[in-house]
Image (cartoon, rainbow, N blue to C red; front, side, top):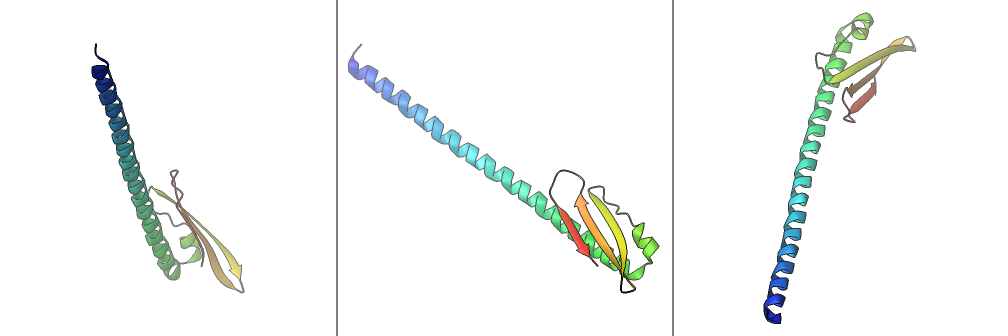
Length: 112
């Protein structure tokens, strides 16, 4: 075989390998971006939902007795609610802690 034919085939194979590598890196980058974006959207949603639950608990505390507040449970299976009370200057104060049950790092703590 002629050296020119072999060098043309080698060069075309080399260019093909380079192009495949570039497109593979691009596709991996696109997939990573989409996965990260969907994860951020999930965390935003859970944070918003936790804040909505916190507002509900605040309203509930202002209209109910201490015993009712301490026995409050959320109807949302994704969140765990913990309320404890303490007396400060003859005023009942509450530690409110809302966190997700799964491994997502969403939690809100408030003293009211």
